[in-house]
Structures are given as C-alpha cells and as structure tokens.
Image (cartoon, rainbow, N blue to C red):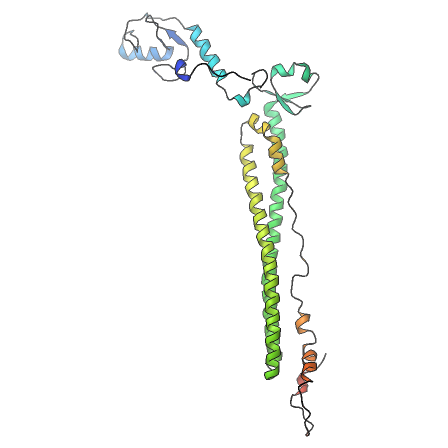
Length: 301
C-alpha cells in the first residue's frame, strides 16, 4: 500500500502562480520559482529581483533539479490510491483475463500471474461495460413489460366498471317491468354487484401498486448503473461485480391474471327465470284466471 504522504501541497507550490512547481529555478537568494513565472515577473519589473525578497538574482538562474524531481514524485504519490496497486504501488494499467483482476506491470511478471493473459485497462473496461449494457437492455425490457402489464390492469379496471354499468343498465330494464318485489330483487343484485366490483377492483389496484413499485425500483437501479458506467475505468472495474449483480437482479414477470373480471352470467343468466321462481312464492291465484303479474314478460330462454 502507498505510504502516507510526508509533505503537503504547500511544500511544492510556486509562490507566484500558487501551483505545483514546473521547472523550478534556484535564485541567488535560494528562493525557488517556476522558470516561466520568474521570466514573466522580470519582464514586467524589468529587473532580475526575487519576487519574494526582492534581492537581485543571476540573469539565468540554474534549474533546481532536486526540487523538480521531488515535485514529480509528489504528484505521482498524490494520485488516487484506487488506481494504484495495493502490493507494488504501481499504476493499475492491466487486467488479468484469467483471474479477472486488475494488475500492474510488476504483477504481470510475478509468479502469481505466470502464463496469464492480460489486456489494457481501457479494453477490459469496454468489454465489461458491454456486459453491463446488455444487462441494462434486459432490465429496460422488463420495465417495458411491467408498464404494459400495468396498462392492461388499468384497462381491466375500466372494463370491470363498464361491465358493472352494463349489468346495472340491463337489470334496470328487467326490473323496471316489475313492481315492489322486483325493485327489492334489483337492489339485492346491485348491492352484490357493487361488492364484487369493489373487491376485484381493489385486488387489481393492489397489483398496480406493486408493479409501480417494481418499475420505480428498476428505473432507480438503471439510473445508478448508468452513473457507474461513467466512472473512471479502474473504479468501474473494481465495482464491476457489484454493478453486474445489480444489473442481473431478477424481477418477477407480471403474470396474466385470470378470473378477476365479473362473470356477467352470474347476474344476467336466466335472470327472468330465476326471478320468476322467486315470484311463484308470492303470486296469488286469481279467480279470473289472470295472474297478478304479467308472465308474458318472464319468457324463459
């Protein structure tokens, strides 16, 4: 692992440009300044004075090689530790195809990776990104399937309501031909229908809520994975297994729900005959031979 840095940015910062030294020169007063900075400063001041202490300096100050080398080393050590090898502190520039791990040039020559196949990090990242993209494509398809299933459920809810309306209209027409007894029967059927509509609609609305939740979860995961695809190659490869696990999450495909619609025959099938059988108990025989209810409207099919 890379050791803790013993210096800070200030130790390697040019006092003129406030950036890490670039080709620092050593002035006669022992102060160091970037070569480009001191030249620009002198061109403005029209003198060869130190920008810090104002002491006169040589016209062509020597390059501070020690400081330049230290600055380069500092910049290398300051790199993101995630792009450095944990064992050799070298840049992770290779990907071991056999072990599926990142490696540096020292790892490549070690006995651990003897005879293993390697590829550059950028090529390996492109191949792994293709795997994630294919998984994302599958997830996107699942989202579309959920959306279609949800749309079908909405249609079924509307259809149930239309069926209920249809049954109400038909029963209204039938029971309008009858009097008080038939009105009572009518109210009983409408109440039963209302309870069934409420029950089945609630069941479908529950399914819709579940599908909405699953669709939101999948969309959220897709957004997270899409952001991870934009990460730097090394970071992406390090989190590849976790990302792939997200992308391959299994979602239960929405099954076709059967039997949730209203069976209209339960209400309209042989309606007149069923009502007529009930009416037989209350209809009284008339001496005139004419029943109190006109049975011509109760034609049984």
